[in-house]
Length: 299
Length: 283
Image (cartoon, rainbow over all chains, first blue to last red; front, side):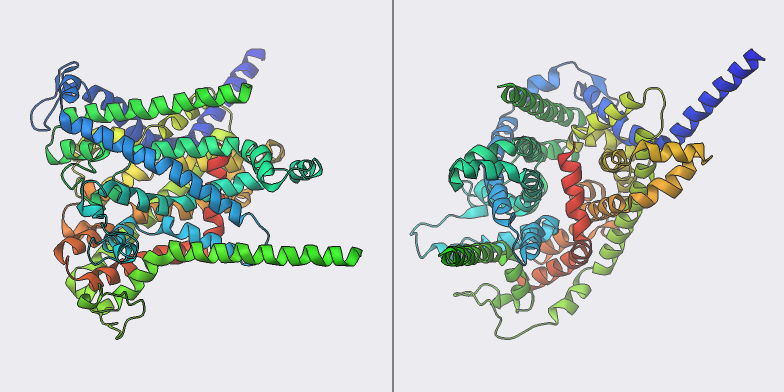
């Protein structure tokens, strides 16, 4: 009888596990086949030679050897860093500034929040196309406005010097609303007592901002920093629509280079090696930022 | 004397509010300028788009632009493809991730947390890292230049599972426990108790997925080649390269491509913002 009960218990447990799995399986099957397997294969592919027609061949580090001698690769890496160094701080400052302005209980604040957030949800192609017209070097409204103050005008997307700043401006304009929402959530989580206490201590607005707001926002800032940095290394759409990597190679970024090697030149192995580099960069940024944050939290 | 202090403070507050409003209005105009320009250019004739000085309000209105664009490129087809993709991906994503989120938060089984870690870990891997093997796989399945490739790629996103789980975690386990004692099955608990409680989460995931799919560019750009499979984003891009001097038509098509997603966003804005704040902050 006892063993019967044990059997029943075991059967019950198995049934429970099966039911639990029935919830997860529909998503897991798709996730496993179309995400996990490709991730594993991407690492193998990085060490192979494959043009999609013949059989893949394992070639060890040859892809990377070629890559490190490839001038276009280094240019795309440099451009990606340039984009990142421009976009990350600017977006952070704009997002925080907007959030501070909007974190007030005054009438109609919701409308302004919607307006600042709106560029983020509008389709990228439409936005990139309209900005290209605004940036038109001779007839565009931006240069028409600037000519009142400057004699030499930037050529924006038609000049290799100004194409990247133009993309950076559009990117900041488009995504600041998204990060503003994150900062607003962070600001609303700061206890009012902290401000009251520092007010009693005679702290001015600026001191309050420095000693209460900024430290309390640290987790948000940390999260925004990671998200922004990682996203900046994945930039492709804006570049493709605004400049197609040009003029010359002035806005050729890492993902654009991956796209070119894989889907224009059909060098799947070589392109995967660049993807591998992208992965290493993103991974080290995440690890590095977590380390720093841990140190800060302890200090 | 007390009263005058109160009055002064009130006055100060009014002035402060006026300053904030002015700052907000100026910033709003800056943010909205591209859209205003887009709207204004869309009802001009193409040779009136770039004029010196800029005409914000056109001298004459060419509303026929909005009719002509439908004749130039198969916009209806682009819309049909985009709606199909957005609706199917959103539906599959919604169903499978809310199931999985229940499994990961309310059901108990061996290896649950390890498996969830695998899910979370892949969020950190950019799609661009594994898009090549994924493409080769789809090619093997004969799905290149096929909308189903994009559906299979995007409908089982781990982000959805992650977002839903965040909400499910905030529902006390005691609720499920007492339902279990009452004899409700696991699927019964999911359907009758958890699902009705997580309507806001469902709304959030719906709108985020819909907007992302509608605006996706790189996925369709790599996969869809033939005109009859193109999405509205690709179609707009094609329009720009085919009629690059027809500025006003390009702007009219841009306006049309933004309208559906703007309507969805404005009507469900609250859930969108909440979804971002939840998935962003509690992670």
